[in-house]
Image 1 (cartoon, each protein chain N blue to C red):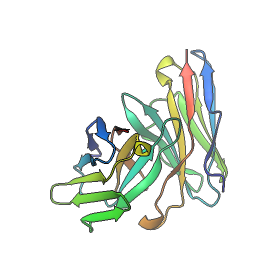
Image 2 (tube, rainbow over the protein chains, first blue to last red):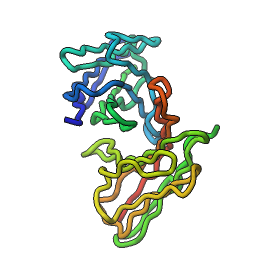
Image 3 (cartoon, rainbow over the protein chains, first blue to last red):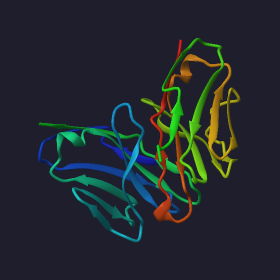
Image 4 (tube, rainbow over the protein chains, first blue to last red):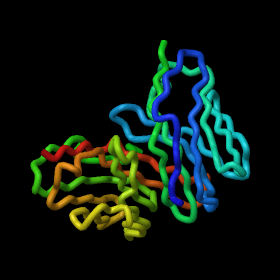
Length: 111
Length: 116
């Protein structure tokens, strides 16, 4: 299965709160899991990425948690800020340069 | 580097017309990708090239769509004839390829296509 399922479709969080976006996959050949951030009118841009031999990766306020046995991974945004309001895509790569993207989560952080 | 450059940014055309979208990848990148983004289907890969050669075009929706990469610095996506259901934002992305650490796809700003 070349799909990545992402939830929720939309998320509203108060400033300072934690935003959590979840993704699940079936293909065990996937070997690289990036998250992309997209602002309105712009193209997606790489935010953070993880490999399946690591259970967690943190960069500033952004953390990826990876559960290989459950075939799930999630993005946590700590101390969410209004500037984090964007659409977030999880993705997976396996066997080629192709990335399979989730459907996206529109995050709104209220001031 | 200026990043991935796409043109035009917006295109409005009538059903049945030919549409050509253009992309200039980042210099030195070996891979070029064309994506389509819609609310219903999200971000879909249409085709990708490695060193100017099409590697996987399984995402191209039908024969009305074609893509070329005549050299390392230019690619086109053509729709002929266009239909209203082709209305979407089309993105071009490029990546250097190689190790996973370098496997970052850099996206252009996209072309918003409206077919009336």
